[in-house]
Length: 214
Image 1: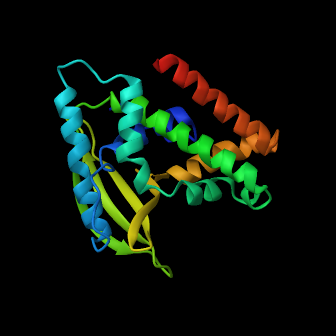
Image 2: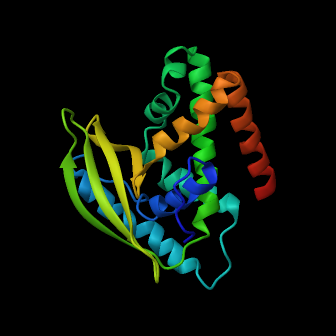
């Protein structure tokens, strides 16, 4: 795994996403499962997939995207994440703009996950404890990602319950929040342009990734 850099850039955060992916895919869980049980259960499928690919032909980017869409995407609330990332720009946006940004942001993360999936180097995940976040119904699940010959990375998952099902809405790896990272990056973009321009840039990145992966 690449060394973590504390910078508010997409490139630096790809390292965190790699750790994230090692802990966030699974089959469907019962609505009564605890958030800790969900995170523990989800470590199995993706690690098995990555281990099976080691030493064999690597999965294509297109196949990785398909895998992520099936096994990762359902466990995240991308609309809530988008609202948190945009902040006041979300509140001032039209519904069509909100939908366009959410779709583009969701696809960008999916593509980024596909890129870092190939960086698996034998990491393992240990799920630790769960704690309720202050003054809310939301919880935090702590895990440790161990990489051979490298320092451990603490990855914390923030979840809330939606209609009896736990949803992940943020991930904090070695003190760096996914939402704060992107919010900082996009605030700079928005300060020198507008939401339509940001959406256009995300869609262009997604189109370039799709062209490269086929």
